[in-house]
Length: 527
Image 1 (cartoon, one colour):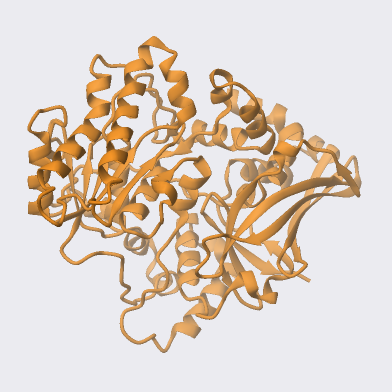
Image 2 (image 1 turned 180 degrees about the vertical axis):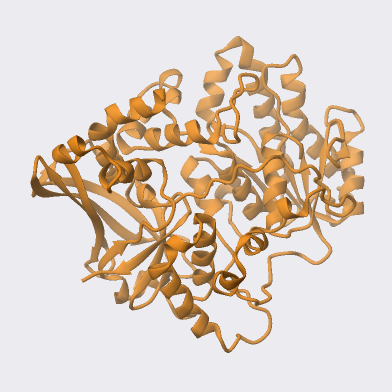
């Protein structure tokens, strides 16, 4: 009730700014999957206790559909994956907050993995990284399980052993690497470590209770960089993720500090606004870190898996910002149909478009999400939105999917469910996007009625092809200003930021766009 009351008071002041300044993010639907930790984590040796809860995402959704709708939402086509034959990913700390999410993502993607934990619970292999023989045991596990990537999600905070535990990942990785240094092939081809941002670390060093935690993380990062950055190291290399704060799950916790998805999502949406980001950057670390937007644990887990499987590149061996982590999490496998292209592919594409544009309300948000992802995989091979004039013109947003926190709140207020007195003051009429100038500019037009008079709020952004853009689908979208009732509003130069924007599907009628949040939304060509 407190959250809803506070949100209602802030609606007029922040909802429109939220919708505009976040651009595509505010229009993205988000599927929150509040699943419990896996009861088993080692695929090769321990069968799942409840297969229906741990199957791949598409199989789970397929089983929930009525018989008459199964053939609409999911085709019976055999698709490939990024799996390396008979090789696995090793997750250190697989029973923890982040590690268990990594295992869930691996399971959903049907990627072979093995996990360890200090106590060996939930089907994990027992491995205490603070033990003197941990490096040798790690090498043995990697060799026996044929591991091609190691993910360390080991961490501790507010404990007497913070330094020992948080620095253990780096020390064990170095010991394991050096023990096999005589051979041409290392037992650990690729190493992925979850650290924290430099800003968070600087603040933690100034707090006595967090000083050991910060120094331990810093030591692990240093050792990982020195070990896997050597010319003699393997081709796989390493990657360090440096998030600020991570939230997620379904419960609130004090030690270790944890925010659940609902509250964390609201905080991420608000602190991710351009003005708040600019304010955070302008303040010293001890104050600015309080305004840093957190990142969802599921996004961190997906980013880790994409890096481990080679789907995502890791520039300079680091993912340093929240935007980098979210973008890495949003990357997906392309069309990887086995064998010849099915004869019904074009028909299936048309079926999906009809279903999404006319029957989306008959399906759950998860099912719509899955259909959008399938449509992306069925895109024409020669589609390159960054070079295609088809992208120009007006595009209307389809709201038949689950919106994020900000958009959902706006819908509740202004699309039939809001109070009448609110509509008399501010009535939301619609939103569309106009792309022009050879795919170089965007106008996000929000039509409202303020005190009965209709006017437009327009977010102006510019588009340019992203530096890494092999498929011709990725743009950098840069904030260029806000216009209200035909008047350009002044704004600080610090608001002029760039975010990734992907058009993952495009034809003459429809498009699928993914903002920095990574979730797809369906666009219909307007008049």
